[in-house]
Image 1 (cartoon, rainbow, N blue to C red):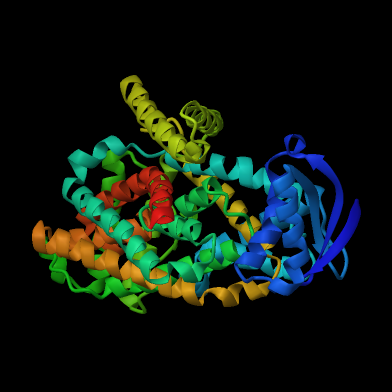
Image 2 (image 1 turned 90 degrees about the vertical axis):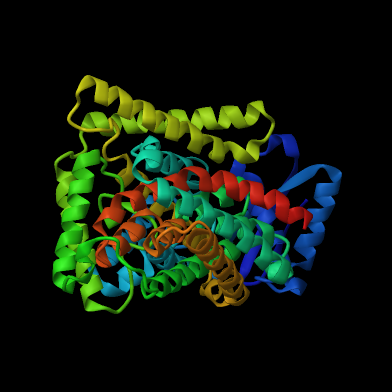
Length: 506
């Protein structure tokens, strides 16, 4: 049986019926499920998708699947496959990073969102295809590898000794993010559609770790590339920028005498603090904002704060040069990153929970990072980590993944469906802030600067937390900020997957 159905600006072609056991890889069923997902989430008109929805339900009942391919009604995309497609996606990823580093607008928007928007524009203009086998490769292999590489340069054993109070505040903040997700779900969960619990869980993971956890949870829960995922990513980055700007102005008494130094002196002291902390720990984690997939700089409109952030960035970059990546370190990072993905998948399969494969991978990668650091220390190696440069490489691969999300959305209309998502995130972050201030500052008696640094590490990640600490004249908080932010990357995916189970029963 052959035929075609026109749905919401796309022509869906159905070719033959094959048994479900003969599916051709993870991307095979994703294209079929995406049509039904678009209809159910309201991204496409229900009437135009009715025939496709009936077909999906019928073939699902009969235990067989129809191969689905999607193409633009106006014609095939200008770039279809092969090296030109990979070149275009790479250009979008690189463009997002360059814009973040070299423009004030880009630093406010963030490289992941810019990469997504560039690819989305090319897809909407008919240059990039909506679906492609290359996207499936990125989704299935490149993204998990990027997440693993991101963790290989972090030695989390230093947390208890070097950042104990910030670690405590970070745990309280993580609890606040989970409670915020539950409260927001009870208030607005029905507005997010059938896949809303997946989006909510991914956002929860993002506000414990970062965008890398958002991507990992999305993949683990089967949130297919499309308008809903693109809108969620856009709303996440916009809300995060607003939140980090807000906590920058919350007053906090400095615990060191240099708190009242002039702005330029505070910036210089902060830069020196970053450098000394990095040298003392031989820790190149988040060496540049280019390595980070979240916000690259703080956005607070204050000239002194901006100067401090850029001063810190330059200082940390110089420190990173002392332990530059080598062919050996990159080769080791790739080998152990792939091994972490393989072991994570094996562990998840062994316990019969395939959805936790990336959470298991994060645990394995963190263990490998600690082992590598210990071995290097005993051997007297000049670099603390044998995987120097893995974080930068992982960050680049993750930007490629975000470009794929934009290309898969296919239409700029995806950006206009962020209304309820923005309200949902506002509730999440409001509860998070209330919990971490009450639990950390009022109950536990932690200094406000510790609480704010931990909250920034929860929501924005290590680089933004370190930048805030430096810009506010808290050089002693830079190292704890980086360490706790790294912990978020390690545990955020597992917590996000656990939250998804709870939301389904609420």
